[in-house]
Image (cartoon, rainbow, N blue to C red; front, side, top):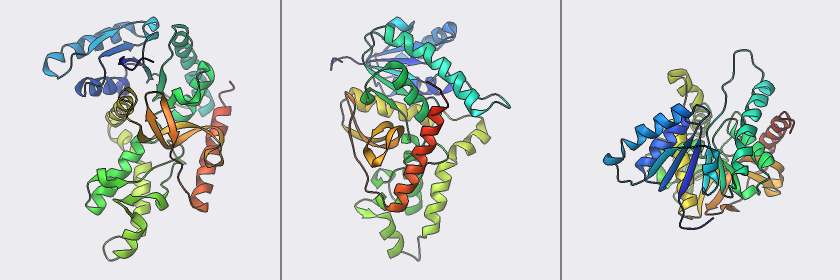
Length: 316
């Protein structure tokens, strides 16, 4: 990829995709944004709508709908397409349908000559990211998923609210599957430079360890709560995708909890899971491997095994 380019292709113009596109426009994250959707008319309408907001923004972004051949010189392809689970449909059936959708996407993207970075948002994001790696044949550093980036943001917001601290000064992570087996390694959670566990023990009259567990559960179940209230979640993930794209295009070497391929890290192999990684122009440029306690290591291993089994159901 050439350092001066800032072209992003979005595939899938549903709620998540367009939340990303709208946030990208408002944050002026790139200078060219391409929309692709199986419903070409919708993609064209969304591009028109965004363009009509350009005079009110600080951006001179070029926004248009196109076909897959537009991916050839893109820096990043964001995939937010997929199918929803039908009533009575099993997880393997849903995964088979989404795998077919992804094959219809990844094959023409690769055929276009694309040599940038795949960024996946479609759930189950860890497994779908692994599927893209397999279908594309791309190196692991250039196929990444949104992972637990949003979960980590939810955790930091909740801890900041609980301790009365700016969330930007909270350093804590949600790792593992973006889903039911994710967890918070509390041994690695910090308020500024002070471990959260120490803050709780030193101020036991104000803060309780069991309330940390309640915060963890709240973070894990946040999506369910939002879906019950408004049927789907999209603003938070849209903004987290923009954060990831910005880290790539600006070569920030930022630390984000992305769905990354593990090849020996944490003793895990052949699996995508949410972990802290260093993100720059070439995608994942390094791992910030956490020093987990034995209990945390067991939780992470269990989460990774669940993801490996889920990936096997794709039968690739």
